[in-house]
Amino acid sequence: MRHIVCFHLYNDYSGSPKVLKMVLEGMLRKGYRIDLVSSKGGALDELLHYPNLQKHSYPYRFSSNGAVTMLRYCLVQLYTFFLSFRWLFRKDVVFYINTLLPAGPALAGRLMGKRVIYHYHENAFVKGSFYKLLAGVMQKLAHEIICVSAYQASFLPRKERVTVIPNTLPKEFASRLKPNKEAAFERKRILMLGSLKLYKSPLEFTSLAQQLQQFAFELIVNDTQKNIDLFITEHKVNISKNLTIYPRQSDVAPFYNRASLVLNLTNKKQAVETFGLTTLEAMSAGLPVIVPTEGGIAEMVEDGVNGYKIDVQNLNSIAECIDQMLSNQELYTKLSDNALRYAEKYNADAMIDGILSHF
Image 1 (cartoon, helix red, strand yellow):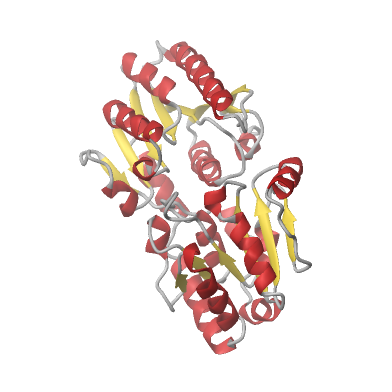
Image 2 (tube, one colour):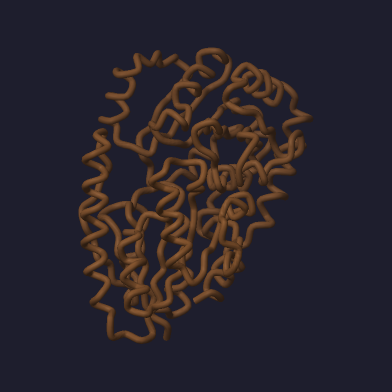
């Protein structure tokens, strides 16, 4: 039985830990022994009932002060670097690094002669210099790099031992999505899932709600209610009556089941999505989507077929597109059918087997 030691910095309910949870669960069911090193709480803690998983936890959270966040990050890297040496004499161990951030254990793994596999979710080359530095570290340390889209992989100077394996949805989650195009069209409800980071465009989403009072809007924020309230006060956000904002949710399936369409308004001038997990979740529920025009997320959408690609800078065009989709049932039905058909291409078993082939 192969022994995998997995490192993930911040365990919450965002995309990368949710994908990691699915991958690890597939490995656990195949009998692999896994040591998981990550922060407390979040999606990964839902795996703790597996007897062949042991979790090593530490406290970690982001701060509004960038210097404090960096200090916490460096302390975690130091801690996980030294923690890694507990597997020094285990010859069958593979180090599985999820995202760019766990650089400390990746370095320790190479120093010990372990096989180091990176699952690369970000696109460092459209972020700041710190992420570019981490991408350079990854390319030096990784035996294999698994990318989530061809767009993302295209930025890496390294071309050898780089594989594209798109993300998929857990079967359990997908089974709870209930596509119903007729009911969805009648609901007239627009959903977005994101964070309070300005490049995710929460302010633009509230602006759309004000502009389209005839429709209901729901925003799920991957943060606490306290931080949401502070954000609303700081930015003087006007919450219209047709907009509801929810804090971090452990289960978002019910929100997809009552939505009509899903938006991703990430500002491509500030960040580019390497993969659209919420877009795949939406299409698996038979929901059309509107996404940016660049990135791995754009690879998932064909204009006028399963959704539309419109940048957040063209907010009026997005509003017009929403109004058109939710006013024309024939158009909506076509988009819904194609969204569901496209989502069926993504197979969880194939993704997990593809990743395991590199171990």
